[in-house]
Amino acid sequence: MSCVDVCPVKDTLQLKPQFTKKTFDKKWVAVGVVGIYIFIIGLGMLTGNWQNNITKEQYVIHNKNIQSLGHPRSTADIKKLNKISETGDENVSTKN
Figure 1 (cartoon, rainbow, N blue to C red):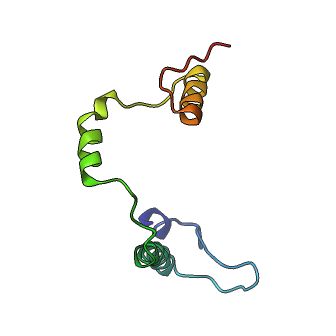
Figure 2: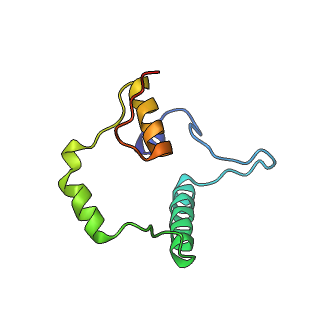
């Protein structure tokens, strides 16, 4: 934001609602965004929606095998993963 502060054009970056003419100080906008982020995470923790069902042992196993994990790189890979998730059989072929 320092580039905006030294910019020769007045009011280079403003944040104001459509229905009012009042502008907000960019520092308070940053505080508001961080506050909303912390509030949402805190609410998730308080309501019990922050945790998942993966045990610490499963995390350790997956962490050891992290080099073998990857993302599908083709449409055929995606189709194969979809069939595996539908059938539960990892020996599924994508050929019709």
